[in-house]
Length: 430
View 1 (cartoon, one colour):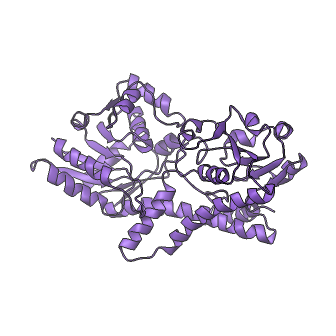
View 2 (cartoon, rainbow, N blue to C red):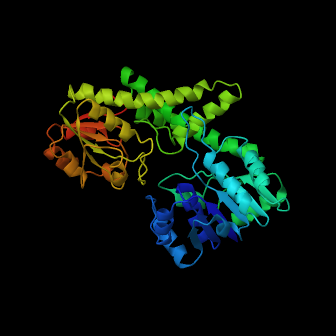
View 3 (tube, helix red, strand yellow):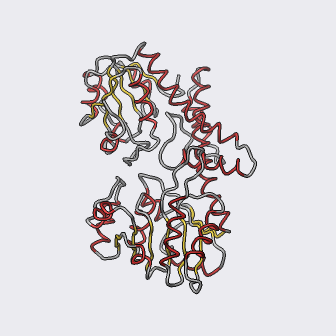
């Protein structure tokens, strides 16, 4: 099957690469000349395990084609995916301007029947507006359908999440659209859920809102544990063993970040407000997520007594492991606050330092954790990269000026770390 993907960010590029790898011809349409030229050479604009190899393989097989020409890209496509960004406005609402502009351009260049599918995270009712825009822009003799097929990939595991998802949601108006999507996804595992378009749009927001709620709930429990001499990790392990709840996302730390959860809970609050409902629960989820970063900085100040002039080593800049994405990353805000208090920052991240240099200034970026820790008054763990879990902490301690560890991801056993001579502070731990 020939398909088109408009947008080459995380969702668009992963979607295109996977469907090309499954034997389809996929046209990827972008609007930035330099990015398209790089993609044509197999150079991808972000880090995602396995994606570069998959893109290069399918470029060589002529199944993956990158272009700026939308008319060329959609001319033979049976399915056209819209995968452009929906960033938050200042009031929390999703900015749909790119989505609607793409819909307009699709309409102007559509010369045959196609199924137009939105993968971008969009508020309920957006696909209906897309249909209106395409209809207004297209020739009256051209027929089309619209559908919603939200993505559920996680950065760092995006390829496996796309190939083996828990579920695939098809929001459609008719049987033929559902059958076309089922045919495209025939080699992808995962339970199929066929719904109305509005239901599919809502499933995406509801899923991310619940994940964010679990994280903030874990952090709220951690706040209390620190005051009652309980261990939040043990408490949440006990809670998570309940099969109705599970442990996934039920971990305390320095908060969630990335391109999805922060913006999606704000967008759902805005959607609810538009329809007359005050979604106070999600407002609190967002509030707690901001509080955890403030509390963590307060712990550092309390532990060191004063951070002005102190050298603080930071391990981890991305919002999660296995990605270079620093959007809404807790590390960025924590470092900024410490710098405002006069701290000197040294940092290391396996893949995110390149992007961090564009955001964080006056930071010494190091080649490895040992270099970052050298002469430091404290060590902060802000991203739970596996390689940080296996550090030789004895060697780290030898090069540090003071042996303080502030573990924002609870990756270390406090007792083992203390036996090495460190003063250890985690999140929600005794």
